[in-house]
Length: 302
Image (cartoon, rainbow, N blue to C red; front, side):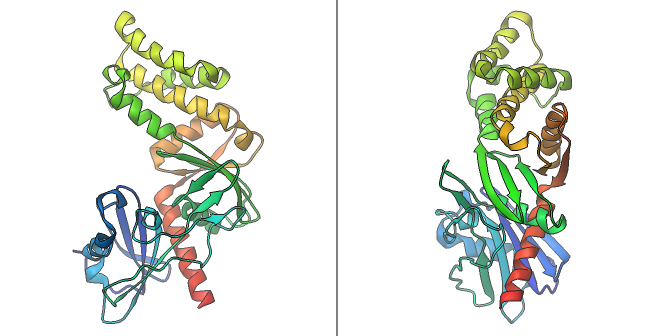
């Protein structure tokens, strides 16, 4: 149950695994709550109840505006929010409106973005981009959003012009937990020099990544390579291959990295090693700023 506050609207970031909510008074955060009721755990008729569990204490007798982003708008979510084709501004008022049984709720779901060629989609990251642009007026360049599916987005004149998705985070998870490499990288430790060496090698010779991945296992069996070194090398190999493929995005561009602090710093350090300084911004803060921008736009167009 949420603490008793009196917001005038509620911001919601609803991902695959987590639900995060903020009680807002204009642009001021009054309270925050979260749960593990992500999209993947819920059937369509369970979304309203999962939301109410967190925000019940914030609701009064009137209707509460709720602005939501993320996988809540996916085909498997509460309501499908159709993608908007790029080039497009990441914030606009064409929201999907799920039907709520509780008449105190008026929920708007922000749509994601789509790209026809090469085919690509994003959902949730567009709100982080909108937040970054709201806090950095006039910014042009490339925004990297690292995560399970890392996005590289070219932004110009307030619009997302093009973007590309890389499954680097999911590859790391699968390789480190479900492949033969799991026996060699089963640790939370980290070796920065090993990461940097693997990153440089993969950037310069990405075509060797498959052989280099198995080398992690062989070095464990034959040379007693530590798990900390192997885990760092695995990350370096995968991120290096991603950076090699994404070179047209970041080479010669102003770059920002938006995401979880630890992972974002890894990407920023990797780019710095290539002579590319990057601005690092917290993903949760940018998501909230993007939701605030969406709420302001709704108020302006009402």
